[in-house]
Amino acid sequence: FQNALVLLDLIMRYALSEQQDRLKSLKRKFTYKKLFIEAKLAEGQGRWNIAKNYYEEAKKYASFTSEVQRCEREITLVSAKQKEYLIVQKEFKLADSYRKRKKYSLAIQIASALLKKLKHLAKAIHDIKRFIVETQREWYEDKLKKFDILYRNAKKSLRGPNPSVALPLLEEALRICPSKRRDLYQKALRLLRKAKLVKDMVYVGAGPFLMGSRDPDSMSNQKPQYSINLPAFYIDKYEVTNRQYKAFLHYIQRTHDHSFCHPMEKRLWPKGKDHTPKYWYKRKWNRPDHPVVGVDWFDAYAYARWKGKRLPTEQEWEKAASWDPQKQIKYRYPWGNKWDKTRVAHHSNGATGTKRVGTYRSGKSPYGAYDMAGNVWEWTVSWYQPYPGASPGAEHRYGTTHKVARGGSWDDWDADPDIPGDAASLSDPRLCKTTYRYPLKPKIRSRKVGFRCVRDDFKLENE
View 1 (cartoon, one colour):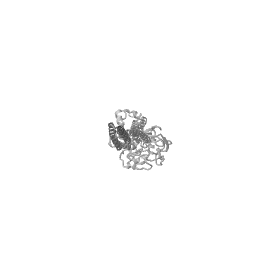
View 2 (cartoon, one colour):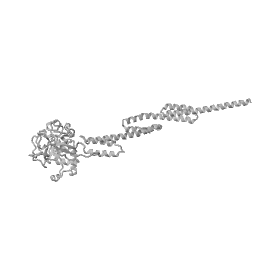
View 3 (tube, one colour):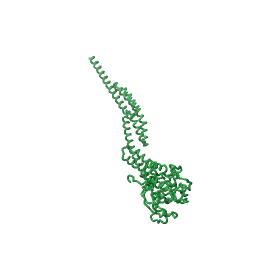
């Protein structure tokens, strides 16, 4: 019996020890799992060092070699994630700053490069992908807004004193236009083609203006003053230069194409007219950016047609030179009602020849056209006819023998050897008035006569 008691005691002690070992094992496994879970939570929150500490602690409670190895792998992975996270923090912040400054291309470039560096941060990868998509959408919307602003400003400039401003605006609009919006691209391209047609021209809007003069000292051929309604048109900002005319002359000499010439040329020049200006080979009159001179009316007509333009009518020329569309008043000179020799290329200002076009900025007309007083007389398409309601009187040149030139010139002080019967003293500033009419025979070629061109208005989309 005593032996039985001893045996029973041993059995009970063994059972208790086994139970305790089992409890210890369970506690060890529970602690391992708890630490592993805590490590994962810390890792998910980006608390990398704490996560590594938890994994290190978990290793101590690992029951198997595989669990130890798992903890070591997780520690290595956390270190890699920590390194990636530091990269993400720095570069993503930079990408976001570019996005806020609307430098979308750089923002996307940095974010895309960042994606290639990431292998372990699943959430960061997801966030960056979303960032790229949102940035692309924001960039697309920004492009549409900018395109709309550029396009509207270009349209507005085509109806203003400087249509050439439309060119860089439309070129930029085409550059930023989203590739998906082919319709917008084509719309801007159509407007760009029109804008190129009116480069270095000014816009003269449709509407009435007062033609002629009421001044007591004005000549009878400028009276009576009357109101006339003109359609919109474009007129050259500057007189046609030698540089521009040279391109036309080379074309004529190379191709012998006279399809742009006036029909009367065949009768007047049966062998064809080469359109070389008088004085063309004299350096003084052939400076590239000075107005071309020594051209007759037929030369001016042919050049204008070749450029896809035409010569202005008297009415168009006078409106562009004298009418203020804002105040709805007419000026005696392009800049105002008082003569000012500092605003014009004129002998009273010391001119001994033509000046570079656009030299006198303060002398431009309300519409923005330069040198409409002085520098050179300018051919118009109009025959020298009396105004409506005027009596021909003693003016024997009315009819279809003389064309009208306008604007005065640098040389209005002495007789012109190129113009038979020209007055010996023409120093009166009234010759530079916007209403003064100078009748010239179409074949006249003078060192003080040039021209500028006009182009008919065109419709813009949604007008």
